[in-house]
Image (cartoon, rainbow, N blue to C red):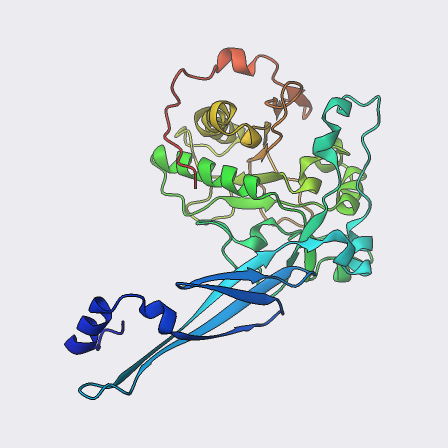
Length: 348
């Protein structure tokens, strides 16, 4: 009820049950679809088959103009945003060509036992100018996960613009929320995690492999990024575009990323093993990023979701003093999961 509503209306509304059935509701969708009413204020929205972002606008009116002693009319408006995935066969052809072909895991590949986790996505999310700032969880926006860094190729002007179609597993967003909560539990008032990279299209991933330096050397043909299951991030409370001093040694280096891994990411993965196996995954730490034209270098972490049993499901790696990637085979011997996780990570 509006703040200026008088006592009679307050009393009327509170003493007359089932008024929601008498509210006249008008609705409008900017992208088609069908709204079904089940009474008692319950509705079901069925989106158009093409999916995509939808804004539902509702206007409700309760008309009591016929009351002899105190006629009144109440009205209100609200809007609800939905983000529906687009079936791959509904994605525009040019967008599919820009995305490229997803790799196929061969029968002799080390990943062959886990090939079900490397199947091409059947749906993609459309990211455009209007919805890139839509909040998809308490602390992350859709645009955090798009291909928001530049190709350096002749067709870059087209490839780098919106709209884009991206793969994004909602479980990755949940895991990042848990990591952020763990960082806050450690005493850091981080508003969010700064995402360096979310989705990477197969075409971009292939291009990246061919680049010199760190980007080409440490990019996998089967990167979890291309399936919407990985993110690279850093913590930037002061907003200077680089990692904060997380371990308190007065320096900004890979040890700050290691601190986040050891004190937060490990705890999230340990709890995932017991409670939410689909959230467990790998973690790598890097002294700098590999984003073309990135204005500021910063240490960062890679995290992903894998969820399968065995194999490289909880692998850990870093970059050694010779700028070589090394797998930390003994990480879990040195940092075993505690019997009780030190951080109470709520299911967001």
